[in-house]
Image 1 (tube, one colour):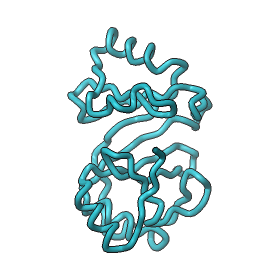
Image 2 (image 1 turned 90 degrees about the horizontal axis):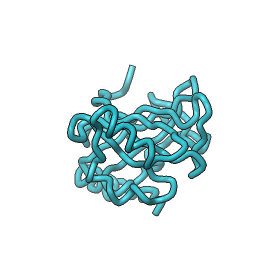
Image 3 (image 1 turned 90 degrees about the vertical axis):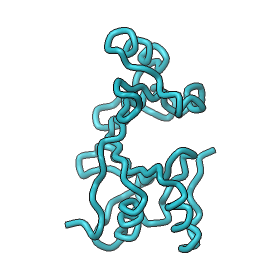
Length: 159
């Protein structure tokens, strides 16, 4: 039983591909996907995905380039991301280390201080017991910024 939060809707899935631009083009040509403009700043960044969507960005595929820190190994580089409203995201953060005990991507226990600032959203990344990568994100940046300031937490930034 979770402690005060409910999981949100599916946001995106991670796929590791040999060439993210070629894969994006295939999905565009064959299945009608389009690149999500909100993530344009990531398209050419090593280690960052190209997000493509068939429903105007409500859900997307995040295409990661194999070799940019991502490997095409079963169970690795494959994951699901969920989006939560800001208050639910904060409830998850508060439950970490208490009713929710999971290991982060670095193998250490995930805590409220494990939050990552990805510019467009805040996120927690971890694995399920079967080595599937899971991500919980929120786009309610102001709500989370206020929480972080109140708690004295500095979000992790990769760039």
